Each structure stands twice: as structure tokens, then as C-alpha cells.
Length: 99
Image (cartoon, rainbow, N blue to C red; front, side, top):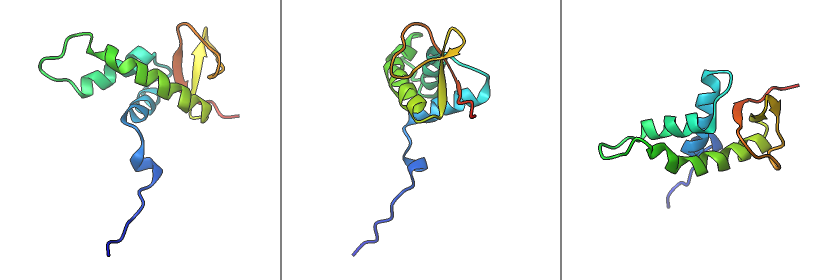
């Protein structure tokens, strides 16, 4: 009989979520493209094209909405916090401002 230990949610976090949280902790705000570029740099292969970051952008956008709904980050549109359920256009991400 084996002992099944459960891993905490922190250890099971998606690498894209970790990248977003890392990037927003490093500066006041970042664009989704900045995060995708960071991920691409971390996973760079010798045969990657310069625009390899583009393949990570859909995952970054999906996870940024998830994190904004959870209250961990803010999605900014024209400098104002945007509703994560209803926004479009150019956005930036920052750590959630509490209070």
C-alpha cells in the first residue's frame, strides 16, 4: 500500500501563472506580450524563431483573466482597472491593489 500525499496548490500552479506573477512582481506593470516574451526566453530552443513568444500569448491571456478574477492581479485598460469579464484592446497587468 502506498501513501498518497497531496501536493499543495502552490506546487501545482501553471508555469504561465508563475511567469505572470513573477513579471508583475518585478515592475509596476507589464504587457501580456512582455510575459509571453519572458516565457519564450525561459523555454528557448536553438531552432526557435524570433517571434516564438507569439505561441505563448493565448495562454498568457487566458491565465491573466483567471488571475484577475481571483484578485491576484489587475488588468489595466487606459490606466484604469478593467473588468476581467468584459474588456478589449491594449492592456497591461499589475499586482492587485488591495483596499
